[in-house]
Length: 117
Image (tube, rainbow, N blue to C red; front, top):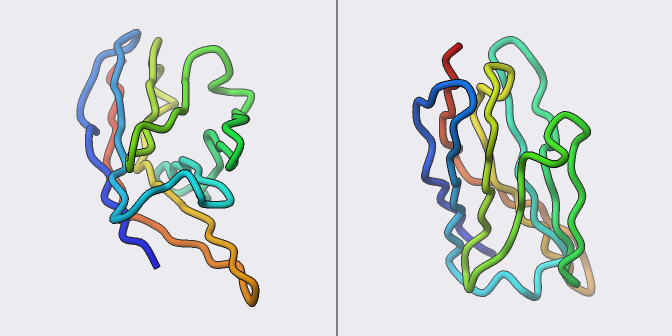
């Protein structure tokens, strides 16, 4: 098991930057993968960026070139630059932990990002 706590959200103007952090209760480098998702009001939760055990990252087309996902010690981070109003939403961190018997998803409770126009 793992507990995940997101932080770093807030209100920012269009074109601004934020760095989100997801603090895990134990080392994250052995996890099968981790990811950032977001959910805008009235919309489904969507994948923003993911990183696998080997460190390879993937991004949604809408954030490619603006966002960077990376790991530092027990923290998953998301550097967000050139923010747009459509980036507004609650951002969630997810960890995927695979054992011999199962694969489990763990989620944080989210952090709000609001980008004003």
